Length: 191
Image (cartoon, rainbow, N blue to C red; front, side, top):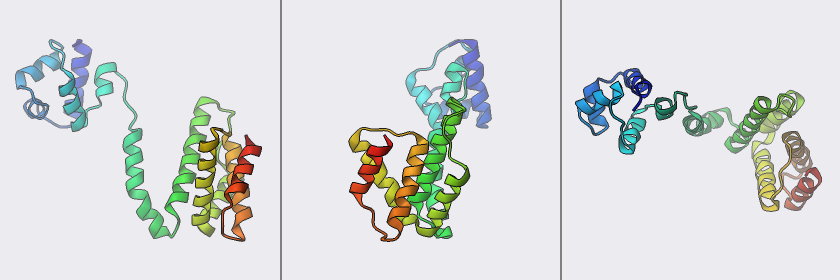
């Protein structure tokens, strides 16, 4: 292991507040092996790195010098906390998650192509209003659109997807029922 790898491993161990001996034991090696890894004299195997990762070590940072983004951890946190927040607020969890997914796609568009479509303005306000008016219907519309896109193997731009969601939501609001044929036709027109 290079010296830089060893330095980053030591930095991660210290970030976790663990002694060399405790960390080594938790990773299934002796203190001498841990010292050798941190000094760059030896390279740890995959099992060691796995155990270090389980302890909270950013193994991508140790190996490559770049911090990993905790997207999967964030997603798990959102999935565990958001349902109770939605319940307390009296809104539909699936619809709220759908709006957050649209916002995430929107944000990734602004990173990749600053001029790409984004969620915001009147569309965002209308989605939020729909969430509070009839979140269950909004969630069903979003779900049916996702199903239609999946089975048709089509994709539509974010702005068209948002407009389709809003148009179909308004159309189905009076009856409270979602018509899959109408959803399929809307997707065909939008793609």
